[in-house]
Length: 490
Image (cartoon, rainbow, N blue to C red; front, side):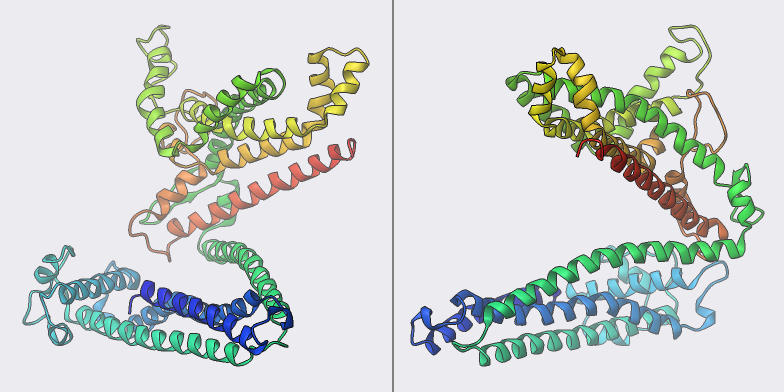
């Protein structure tokens, strides 16, 4: 049974259970809700929760683990001869899953019976051609060992799905029966529901925390594997980024870190002044009609996909700079040889970051108490003096937070720098030259059929962990600054 249908059935059982539980509670009280310990809907909610929570919890865990377990079982059964030279077990299992998917499509479209798919043999059938009938394209003929593994994969997946369906439905029905049986007028349904909701809230908060911990640990473990294969001194103190999947790679983060910080700095030079001045104008000078029109229009920039900014940098802004600073350009100088450069990516990224700075700064400035402005005016200060000496210092913690958010966004940006800054890892001070960033190299190292046992692929995790530590350090620094200045205005 498809997972969606199973979820709908569980929700249908919960809905029926809600009304049955509510009705049973009223019947036990003789139809008078005043004789109940709790309001009637608490009894129904208790039944619904005991149907939904166990069933959906098992469904989620089973769905997450089934594929991993089956993948490990099938891959362990593959003979060594099934892995061609230069390939990996991961690539072979990818082909196994594609073949299994193709067999499922053949059966679903009536081009092959279930028994035929189970008894198919690569020696007697052109499996590749049959799978091509349903749009599954393979690069080579399917070996018999791969076909058998795909058939085992399908069989185990089907068996697991049946067991999961039965278990989920049994849990839902058992939860409904148990909760309905305990429903009576003296049952403390409200207390039970509130404790259940509290547990769900704690579980949601714990899930978010554990997800963060899991992400960090995954990067830490893979980074440890990387440093077991490559020198950490070369990574942190080398001066060259030159990955070579045939060996002898130089994998220093310093050129990438320089490009990341340089492009982010250029972006902030654009975003912070423009965004902050826009926030001051909108909050202190603009009339209500102008503000109601300009603020939403400015925030539209935040909703534009970054790939659009990247295309703008590549097609429009980069060539514009090249026509000005390039050989034969308007200025007649040869400072720029390619449309991709630090300035191209940095300025376009700065335009993208303007709403992050302006919107947050505007909200913070508006949150400054009007009494502080009135006191300044009462002492004879002008509007500009009040803004400079009262409003901005009071709003400084929030403004620092807005700048930090923009900085983190700039450091983690990928598409704009891929399309606007180029892919050259080096130390360069000219903003009209091409550079690359850490995020760009992470994408590059993990794109394709890289072997996760090689340092050239594992270096992406070391880069990601370094980027995480850098961003965390910026957050800690900003928190320190915010607390320091906030104490002066509390």
